[in-house]
Every structure is written in structure tokens, then in C-alpha cells.
Length: 166
Ligand code: ADP
Image (tube, rainbow, N blue to C red):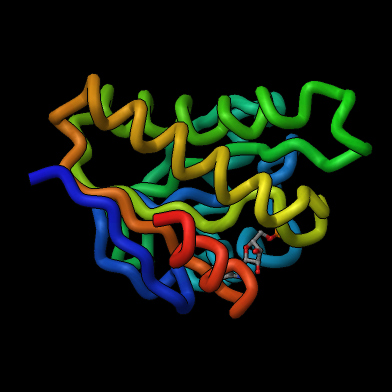
């Protein structure tokens, strides 16, 4: 059965086929969830990321999960918020869609997302949550091969927003 789940906590602890990383275009690590994923996965993750030649905003690339409970990491680059007239909404939608497409292509069935772009990149949280949920719901309608999508919130504000919208 296809399900969408909401949990609050640390995405690096999840035992799913893939966790999604809110990375930057270098794919060489950063702060926030990116830093947490690299710390938990270990040095080999950085070594694999170095082979990928970065990633464009809105797109996604996949690596193994190494020391994480998750088998894979899907690295996507969210847009930084610059007021809303720089294609931010379409780019954020692309992050969710392209991550799910990659999961599907690799026969992965369970995938967990952080709240992409809502940290350092300052995308308005309510808008970001609405885009995340609408994009995932619409993807699942056409892709029954994906069995479970988990939204992982870290802060209380995002948790409350997702709970209300779901
Ligand atoms: P971005 O640059 O895309 O904004 P951030 O890592 O700064 O990326 O923030 C994205 C979201 O990830 C924020 O909502 C932040 O609270 C959340 N976050 C930070 N650490 C973790 C973690 N260990 N697990 C899940 N979410 C996290």
C-alpha cells in the first residue's frame, strides 16, 4: 500500500531504502542535514560524492549509504530563497520529483525526505511544505512502485505545518 508518513527526528537514523540529502551544488558536504548525513555515513560517502561532479539546483544524484541504516542517499540541491521570483517554487518541486524518479529507477520502495531548503536556504516553510506534499502525492498517483514516503521534520514549526497539511 502506498503511504505517506510524517515523523519528527533525525533522518540519519531511518531504516529506509533511501534518505534524501538537502545538499549544495558541490555535493561535498555542508551544514544542517547535509553535515549530519555525512557524519553518520562516514568518509566513504564523501569519496563517492567527489566522483559525481556536483549537482544542479532542482536535480538529484544517488550514492550508497555506507554506515547509514539507509541503503542509499539521494542528494538533491534545493533552491535558496531570493524573494520568490527566481523560479524557486519550480526548482523545489524538481527536487522532490527528481529524487522520486531516481528512487523508482533504482527499484527503491521506501524513501525519506527532509524539509528541503527550509534551513539555511530560507525557503518559507509553509510554502515549502505545500509544494513537498503536493509533488509527492501527485507522483505517487502515477508511480505505484514507490510504497512509502516519509517526511522527516526536525523543528516543531515544520512538524506542525506538515501535520496540518497532511
Ligand atoms: P537547506 O540548505 O536546504 O535549507 P538545511 O540542512 O539547512 O538545508 O535545512 C533543511 C532542513 O533540514 C531544515 O528544516 C532543518 O531543520 C532540517 N534538518 C537539519 N538536520 C536534520 C536531521 N539530522 N534530520 C532531519 N532534518 C534535519
